[in-house]
Length: 211
Length: 211
DNA sequence: TCTAACCTACCTACTGGTAGGTAGATTGTC
DNA sequence: GACAATCTACCTACCAGTAGGTAGGTTAGA
Image 1 (cartoon, rainbow over the protein chains, first blue to last red):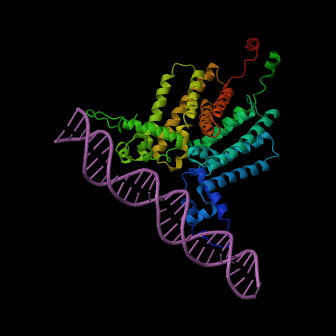
Image 2 (image 1 turned 180 degrees about the vertical axis):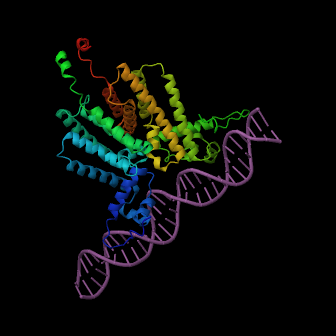
Image 3 (image 1 turned 135 degrees about the vertical axis):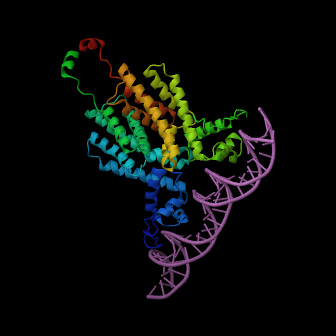
């Protein structure tokens, strides 16, 4: 595809190939899924030969593990960058990740894409997917609980249960955006946040009556 | 459903091969996805030759259309069977559909599986997926609104927005069940219902006071 | 006899992966 | 500094297997 713009220069200190492979594979995973992209697609995109990819990743499974590990590293970095913000701002920023995904060629959540292919994946890749999902769920649960304590969120039961609901809804939302367009994505996330908003303090007069 | 494409020959005793193909393809779609199952898988499962499938479905795309139309027909029938029930019971029954999916070899929502492969599918299949999703969303919105009116559900904003959230969350939940097991599925649906429950009516005496 | 519903035998395109080779940079030894 | 050995990062050519699909023959029932 863009072989001319990125000529392979063997030996010429151009060892960002591995990183470019991971980056391209990340994009292809999010748009087409793990099983649906091939070494040939990657090779065409990078302007190298298919067999050369095996030098960096002996098997496609190895590539899958590296790709998911890279997603996890990115998320860890994202978390670090948002440590200072209050829970509500953090949650907005988190949901914006998915909004950006949807707008970027209809990319889906990598965890959702891997889940779709789950029964055709080796255990090594599955385990990386679990680690990535777990990182998101732990962060969500902590943010939700902190927000509830601060009075900016309201939800029933345990924070980890609510975290699972939000995680699942976000995954479903980006998939829905493929069918219905980006606007659908925004609608869903807005409703998700509206459900999380604490109830208005009712009318003061009624509170007096009730107490 | 698709009477036009059904070889409805008056004289010849119609075989059930076509129906078995659709049924097997439905199961494979839900477990592995549309792109991940092949005519060979279907042929092995039915004990016929791969080429024979082309007699019933000239192309895999035709099969995809028929499979999604069958899902829609099943759902229409399900809706008909639950017409009499109250909104809360209907919603419970609806979510149980997904619980059964997850327990049945980790089947996912067909709409979610198709969404994952969306960019590799022809427009004919995409359109059928939209029709199926739309049927679910319309039913959900109607049930939610009826439940809100009856006081068994509470949620902010329009019912169709809440329907989208529940639909997405259910899709995400069955995918999550692949990673974490059936129990996770139950937890998520329970939380989803808890969020939908109207706020406790405080002490009954207070209701009298407020009215 | 007609034809629905299969079959055999084959096609092209593509998959992940392997074998073996090579240009050029790096490193260790004298 | 000279130079052989080794390493990096690619290459060509190929493998067996599988994908969806096609052409044309066979068979069983109305």
